[in-house]
Length: 470
Image 1 (cartoon, rainbow, N blue to C red):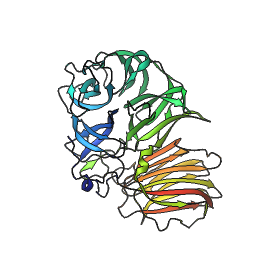
Image 2: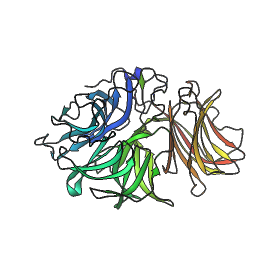
Image 3: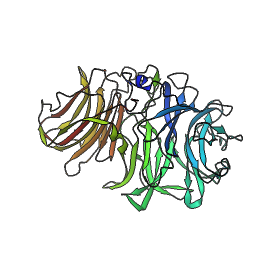
């Protein structure tokens, strides 16, 4: 059942994101069960329908045809005798390996039952495109092995051996295999302690004949390595996914058509130290924009790169373009512009300036800086003056990332929504994602340089329309 009534009013609240997903009401955290099936992208998420703080976990549910415009559906999974419905994943059982879908295919969800019982892995299935779900009568399919943390199953089909693979974390990372989604064999484990894992192959530099696997740990960090269906072998150090505070529990969509070919994921925009106390009224929780993933060769080795999906460009409206210009201290080429929703594409050539970039959501004493420090070769988002931060003493902070320029050029893609900012530098090699809570009236924009001049090579600035207008 669709519950999209009056979204035009609900999603016009002053602090409501306009092109990021948020729940209609109450609490939301981890993305779950991301799967594409019969023309729909399914997005399930951890949801407490009884309040704006974490509580008994359900699976909220929404669907989209383009990953931009979402239809909210009824709750998919409820707590039961196996515990609350904690995080997990969903797959298309195309060949009816489970026996749930005679003569056809359907959706299966693997999730953690927990809270009132030890953490264990459970199974549910749907024959009506995810609108209703039946829980497996012999749950759990994997009982707790005697540990306190054992959750967040990520499941996918490993075609070369005709087996399902499950990655479970919460503590150590464990790898299981199954022929039917019901009976599972422990294959191997890693000593890394984390939660919300993901595991997927990516072509190297776009070459389908060369690929490596990426093991994501909580959306914060990742390894590049090899996987044979049984064992993941690390071939890199532990690498940083996102240098901001607010990208967590990232998950990728399964079953995206081969004709599309992309690997796409999203993360919960939160930090566990303050997620439960961020400013809120009737709802709390925001999801990042969907990001397309690639694996590229850099001077430092293979690195995961992330960029906003192309579908977001349909929300672009008013457009400002600036050609090559010299920026000098104390001047602002965007002095007449105001907005709280922007898609910015910019490139700079450093000059004698020590620092340069953007001041966004500026007004009074408020501003959020997105800049580059030429002395330290570091990209940063500074939210020490971005607005409300009284809810947590860690929130007002500056987040930095090392970034060596290519051909003495900094390229930026910045997505600014009412309460968030996501920065993609050097075509997504470095990403910083942060929540911000400025005053509604703080909507000025400034190009700035300090300590000397900087060359703005080019700028395209787009106001972003709401994804929720009917």
